[in-house]
Image (cartoon, rainbow, N blue to C red; front, side, top):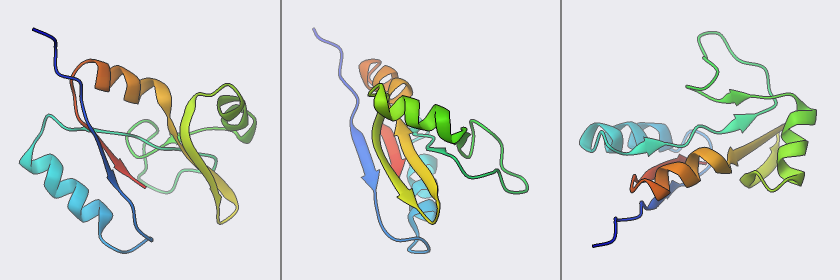
Length: 103
């Protein structure tokens, strides 16, 4: 019997619409859901931790990842780049885990 592949669950809306609240409730409901940690070129804010809130990257590293096909999606917003690194998502999906995106 083949192993189940994970699903992508994408929450997308403008800032302030409640994505983070809904994402938190989904993760409380199903702790097995993996959260896709986005990458950004903006500096970390007080209390933010690299790898938990975002992957904080230099602009050069971010652009290299885009060029190399290592981002599933990316955008330039409010003067900074944001995107979803491909590797962690692919690994989770291949392991049968569902992955939640908050975009």
